[in-house]
Length: 178
Image 1 (cartoon, rainbow, N blue to C red):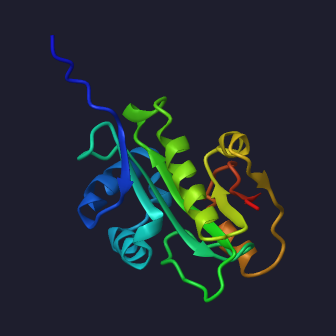
Image 2: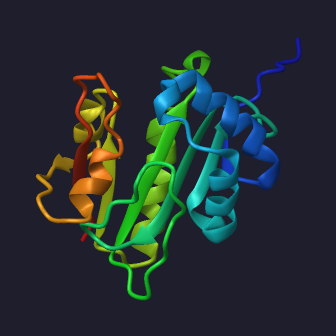
């Protein structure tokens, strides 16, 4: 009997993946946190080496990660394009989402591992992110720790992730890589 099992695949994100990314985003976030297709396309065009897709098959998409080289303590506001810096010291993980039907398959862990491997290969000493939707425990398990943000504009940028009427705080988190 022939085995038709196809192993899950992780790969670099392509422009043709954006419709699937938009679908996954809509399945994972409330309407107030949805980012535009235009912003996603601009991010991918700016930093294709730091954007990944995971799928149950090589040509599918069930999870994604957008990240980019940045500076520690710099926070990109929700819905804004990435801004590259001349001397990055940090890989900023901006958006990680796993479609509900793909949860439990370690897609998020694999995407983050790929990002951190990339950061170390680029000699970046830090990785940072904004934890939303009560995801601090997940990120803590991957080595990130919450950091209080007091300075502007980082504080205002962090506040852009707060959904009106929600008690779920957005939290800035860091991990030292070296």
